[in-house]
Length: 84
Image 1 (cartoon, rainbow, N blue to C red):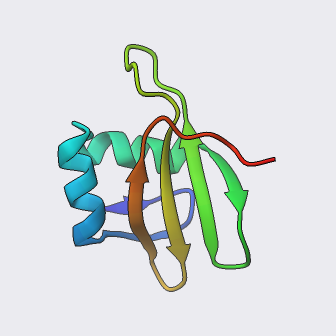
Image 2: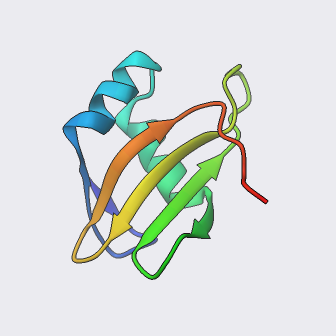
């Protein structure tokens, strides 16, 4: 998988794939989330990317990622809430 937005490949950890399976989230949905979701930075390399999807009752969806030479999806969350 490749992200145009970040101009790099996307890797999904085993943990994130398990969460995707549990929550019925496809790779194409993850890629859409990465490409079009809102970004919040934790620091220079760790980010949260989140987006609400019509038709899902578990909004917001969020991926926690690390951006280095590639974009690594560490986990996938649902019912995500932004911290103040």
